[in-house]
Every structure is written in structure tokens, then in C-alpha cells.
Length: 96
Image (cartoon, rainbow, N blue to C red; front, top):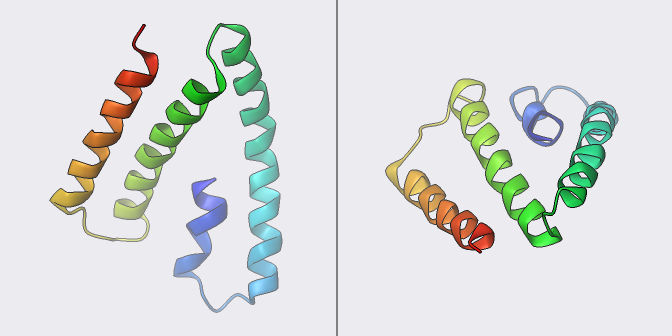
């Protein structure tokens, strides 16, 4: 979803309606993978909270790489500190 939601930011000369259409086409492909992955995780014993927390952390990892490499944004220490706090959320979500 990172490319669908943020990929257009560097290419602002594209009309907004085209950016929306392209983003939805990209998102549709990503959803075709996300829905089965959630079903498999749920059937394997994960609950909805665990699935969502894991998905958000993975999404933030992907976005971090995207923001640094594609958007050329600086990775400040406070973003890394925030991410490590989220890893604590993952720990407690999966702790038995």
C-alpha cells in the first residue's frame, strides 16, 4: 500500500484524478495478497489484533525503506525510537 498511497508525492505534475486511479489499481493488486494472508494467519491461530499489529509494523518497515530511498527523506533518530516502541507493542500482542 505504500506505493499506492505515497508514490505520487514525487510526481505532482500528474493530475490528481490520474494519481487516484493509478493508486487504486496498485492497491487492488496488493489487496489480492493481503486478504488471503490475513485468512491464513487467522486460521493459523492469530487473532484480529495480532494480525493488525503485525501488518502495521511490516507496513512501517516498508514505508521507512520507501521514504529513505524513493522520497529521499532523512531518517531521524526519533522515527527509529518510535518504531522500537511499536516493536514493544508486537511483543505484548503476541506474548502468551
